[in-house]
Image (cartoon, rainbow, N blue to C red; front, side, top):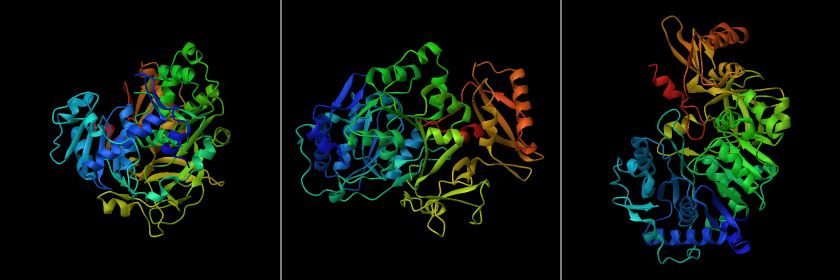
Length: 504
């Protein structure tokens, strides 16, 4: 698979990345040259391959320049969410052993709350920060050619979104210099989604998350152009897709919900004829939401199930999903097994823990216990999600094990209740949690965002009646509460732990 450097020679003036919100752009030549300057600057500081550099940046050109440059210097690159709390940022910095940090000047308030005594090298992008050198000082006077010697290639050192606790680091070995042009991951995504040098890929999500981070680089490494928005805005996305002739895009279900909520004249007012592949993942997509998107965009939507750990991937296209609504597909990387808590295989349509066989091995950094919990005696790995297979081997997700509600000795899966609630036309989003109950231990409670923003007693009664008609007794919520919004990570994952904390 060609990488950035060859494309800088093949198509030097072609845009590798465009940032419509600021008007900035990076050609392949510019990105390659500036990445080399970063690499030389980091090596001149005495940083050694395998050490970690953290990025606390918005979606800016510097994010890409630093990522490519740090990896050429053999460093592990850890992007930090700009929405993490200070203690979470410090946890990642210390856990990763970051010896360098580049922060955006716009995040001065967050940076001021950090104890950075252990971070030896600090650089500010986009302005000044107390105690930080300007990023330009790292690059000034440095060569624009690839660093001399066979320096191993660094990788992203990503941390989980922390939906069930503090973020967990996922570290992989450095890439040998001789393999610098080889694909880093399984390449089935390129064949399935049709990425090539003509791809124009829209990324409306933060680059510090795994999927947008990887797919932006994958697009560039294949000679395509990435269109990178500073943040998600539904109407803005449609306008940018039309203006730049976007061919590929990636979303999370909450983005679909907000796109569908746009007035009809905005939904119909843009030419999306170039758009041939829309990918979504990160969280389960309610069946009515996906059906509505298919009705709008046509059969161009692909869904995948995977994790930053890279242990396996399932994929489903539009036509197959219409035949198997709610499924996340069959594996294209690894083999899926559904096991009970004792490790025994479960028959079709029986919920159990999802295990992948044959994927890449990984380790949670500095957490051998959690790593051991992710593997069984056969060497299969799990993300601790629950689901089931049908007779044809299609995977359906249920929940995370940590989200399971135990009510009167019965396992209750919140996602099953949420799927029923989402069929009501007045429901925009729904989440179900278990709240303490003296008799049953826990009882399901529904938290709902009304589509029209006007939840009332009538809607609550309709939702309770709907659940009584569709769900067995222990699964029926005993109350419906209306909220203005549900807490989610920037990747669109529901932060169920935040909801639970409100009821402790």
